[in-house]
Image (tube, rainbow, N blue to C red; front, side):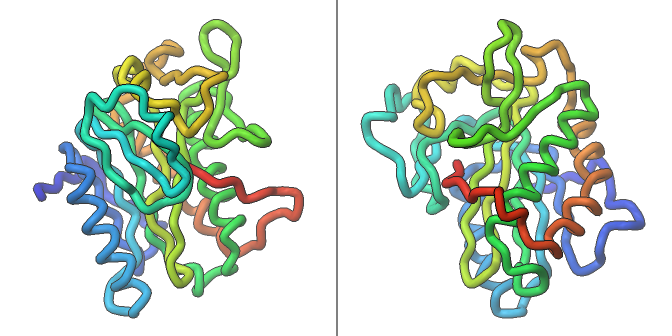
Length: 237
């Protein structure tokens, strides 16, 4: 794996969390194997926590609740991800963030982790002029598409093993949205999928990464607090 770091962590980035920024595409199976090994090493106290920003070549990933009928056209490789949720798509023009953190050091709150991760993506989207939100009963990060209807712009998918997290989020910067037609994204077929590009915003991976890192201290601080009682942990993809 060749790693490239177009930017470095700022002075507020914790030394005990590795920040990895990959400028090229990383195969999904390769990333999944590395995540799985790193998750176990963190749990055993043998490795630092990790935040990894990257991009995948086209792939469909299946969560533990994926239904065969929701795989409409397997035009790309299909990989069982081991996370919660159903089918999702990853590919060029989409920014992926894998977040491997030890919740034993924090609030030990799975709901709180998902809520904080959603908030991190929502705040970053706002920096680029996109108002996004959670939607009760619907998985993912949502916004208003060009036609005014709600559409999905980001996905959240996590797995927690012995209080150590893995997987994370994906955000549509400028992917080929037709690639989502091969699946029923996250099992929701009533709403479409959109991107920053479709909404009129040109955002590079480096720009997205820099904006996310600026909000990282707030995200990490939120993990020390229990999730608000009204927030429900949704099965995520």
